Length: 167
Image (cartoon, rainbow, N blue to C red; front, side, top):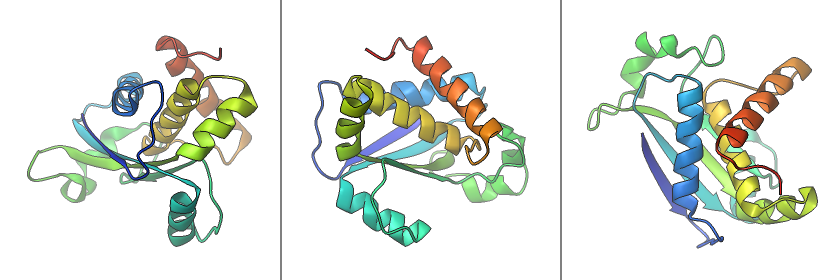
């Protein structure tokens, strides 16, 4: 996995952003049994930065905690066989041979405020947002109650496996 981090706002925590992001992303890929070497981009921004992106791509003029931009169009969540078809040409980075999997944008302000609100560490909140976003990159959603339950279970399983639990 190639994991690129752009920290637009020079955010810092008591953990290494790139190391934790990479660890959580890899755990999701392993759990989902993704058979490809993938490239993932993580951008760290603030309220204004994510508001602009949210407005541009979703026509929602407000900040949020995390945005996910999957490159793969799934028939079923976690079914990576769709990559072998027509999508592979569009997703393949010719320089690396890796699949361009998608982009994650995390709002540093929400990491901090939600950690306080939910009574756990910033590390746990950040890891949760990466896991949540990675599941979106794997085709999962939470628009319906059953979908949300599946995502929540997977997120909790991954964070528990990594030992990143609520404090």
